[in-house]
Length: 409
Image (cartoon, rainbow, N blue to C red):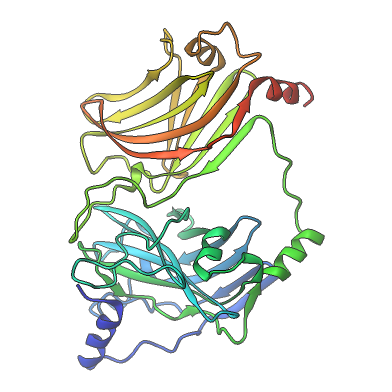
């Protein structure tokens, strides 16, 4: 398997001109201390130099924004598609350097018909290697909670990088970072996740000219930025590790089923229902194993566990199910799949929650350990848990505290 540098070297030996000089981007907006937007050269995303430009990989505009919990990188491409027209898959990477330590870190995401996953390496996080010893992004280099959204309608890729991941990669607290060398690279992938440089080094800013000091951003936000919303007793939200789903492992071509990789979970109470939204890394309409996918929410009360879920199966259809607690009949849970938001939402009536715990109502109910999981199905039946570590830990969701809040609004 060839590394990126080997691919470039092979290209140069073949007599093809070198890539254009880096940092060819031009700053077009700097609205505040936390944001910088820039335009990149276009028509410069070849695939193995046999195809002069693939619009799916051609970065035209990039915005970096430092938020209170994440750094969000939005890359607009010429025409985002489900996959490149001239390759098996694609990879979009955000590249950043810390001016203080001089280290460079890469965060991104790859997607192919045989699966996808987050990319994370650099600084204190070594890049993964294949069995043959080549650099390889089939798995992230370390634990991460990175998520990426592909919006075909807006032709943009949004990479959301937790500040904690950046701090861990650079080996320091986030507030000490001076983010510079801001860039986005794209690669075409073959069926073995072998990267081929496409729009590389040109959608980047000169590190000597532009920087985003974390401390300046945080000071600006504290003085003039939008105030964060007050926490609600009706909501429990938590992130999970991404790129950690149990897929078919291989030293050659592992299958990475990111449709069952739980990334974010939100529990939200209303006056009538408990809504649980499970956001996965990349929701697809079919699994890479078995005949379907399944998703469930589980939570506890005084040692008892209630679990409700949904399966979407090519043989058995889409069905809501109860896996734990006192049987609820009829089961009036509703499930909705949102492909654009990569999410599955279960609407569970409060009455069903009460019945599952043997209660008359939820007026005094405080549930513990809210969690979610994802699994594969075969003919509608669960056959293997793919991602079962998405949990809020010791957090609780208090129905009476939420009811009190709802009564005042």
